[in-house]
Image (cartoon, rainbow, N blue to C red):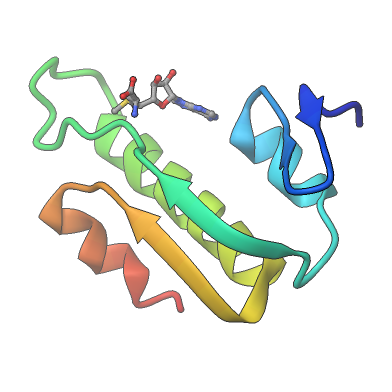
Amino acid sequence: MKPYYQDKYATIYHGDCLEIMPELEPESVDLIIADPFYVPPNIFKWKNFDDFYWAFNKKWLLESKRILKKDFHMFIFFHLKIWLVLNCF
Ligand SMILES: C[S@@+](CC[C@H](N)C(=O)[O-])C[C@H]1O[C@@H](n2cnc3c(N)ncnc32)[C@H](O)[C@@H]1O
């Protein structure tokens, strides 16, 4: 997997987080800052949106747990309802 940018301090990948995060080594990340899309309740009335939205959040949060180092920091800008899936930690 080719980084978008890399120097001695940071590596940046650009793409779908659900494809990139599973490629990263366990406990290899110092910090996650995330600003995931947030639109619940389903203002667009997309069919199955809630299932998609929460499944998406659960996937990237579980990947975050796997790739973050033990004494990690994670900053998330989020809708309060994301607390419902943070219990996966
Ligand atoms: C709330 S916006 C973030 C805005 C950004 N912090 C800014 O100040 O411009 C959510 C972003 O998540 C991105 N996004 C949605 N699904 C994604 C995914 N699977 N992987 C990576 N980024 C995703 C969207 O393209 C969108 O830019």
